[in-house]
Image 1 (tube, rainbow, N blue to C red):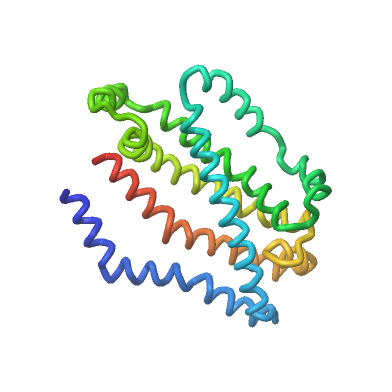
Image 2: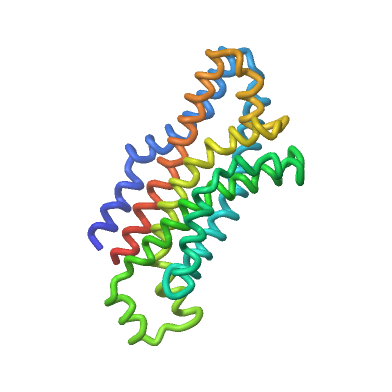
Length: 241
């Protein structure tokens, strides 16, 4: 309990508030300064960033739900013996090899980009949750049996608290790969908006490309620092309780 209160004090301290505000506004400040130096209209650059973030958001949500659901369904038992090797093979399949087929089916569309984001993000989430579920302590399972947890109560009081920390961990890894995948996919597909379009348009300008990469890294770092790392710490604290 003392530990929780300590964290509560930290999250209202002036230093933490200042650091949070810095990581919130740093990417925007970088974009404004960068747009001035590179003579690029800031609104256009912000729109490209926003479009890629929206695509990544939808890809992540679909991947998280599918990855977590499949992991819960196939983490043990006879189903796991059959399904896990298949999923392992699917994870190893080079996703971009299927990109020409996807473009033929859906064209240079948001559907194509989001599908490939799902295929990129889902596997770190799936295998992270599966690994965590396989490490469930035998005492916890016995406690669930003694408490006669079934159906919704088993899901709410047992599966959900145990799997959420690994879902967050898998999300951090998956989104790290997702940022790379969205730029590459948007470039290959030939999207007329998004970060891929930006990097493709200025590929001949080494300076602009370099600072664009630095800006993207700052954005990713800020999102992790503000959202994912505190969430990861919080979920592990809840599990420890």
